[in-house]
Amino acid sequence: MSETETQKKPAILLLGAPGAGKGTQGAILGNIPRFYHYASGDVFRSLDTRTELGRKFVEYSKRGELVPDHFTIELWAVQMENLIATHVYKPDIDILVLDGIPRNVEQCKMLEEHVTIHQVFHLSCPDRSELERRMRKRALKEHRLDDASETVIQNRIQTYEAATKPILDFYPDELCCDIDASQSPAKVLYDILARLQTLGVYQEISAMVV
Image (tube, rainbow, N blue to C red; front, top):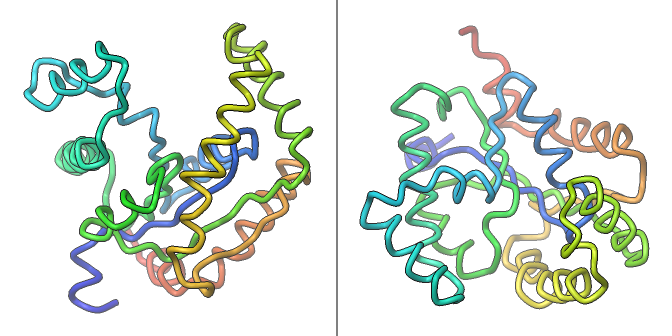
């Protein structure tokens, strides 16, 4: 890796519609040495409302407004530095697994200052009825009955199609890898791991003795 690249955090990105299995695969990868899974939900769960940045988030939330992209990425960057400072995440030996962030092309551009994306895994599931089934099942399992409604499910899929899926066009074709998300979770993981084995950054980091 070049000097410029080593100053950035090596990362892979999991991209897919709601219900495609990003969270499942990210959590598994995060339990494998040399990977650190950081989901978008972790950003907001770790929000410290005593800070100026935290208070800004609360203000947007109270008004029912979307948090601007630059605040989201700023909070993400602060949390990553906190994880590094506490030795929870070690960017010199860990590949960051991004899940749910970035959410749009603008956030991708902002993240370029902080990370080098070595692979984008697109968990593809063209069968929207299967995605809806998974989302409904998960919502009921987690007792989030409102999220099981047809309106909420359709809104989430439409938001993904309009704002998040265009991320695939932002990154070069050679960085994007389509994975059939309609397969079993074990087969999806197998396909992801097979691709990861070919990445130079993984070969370099996995060879380190720590």
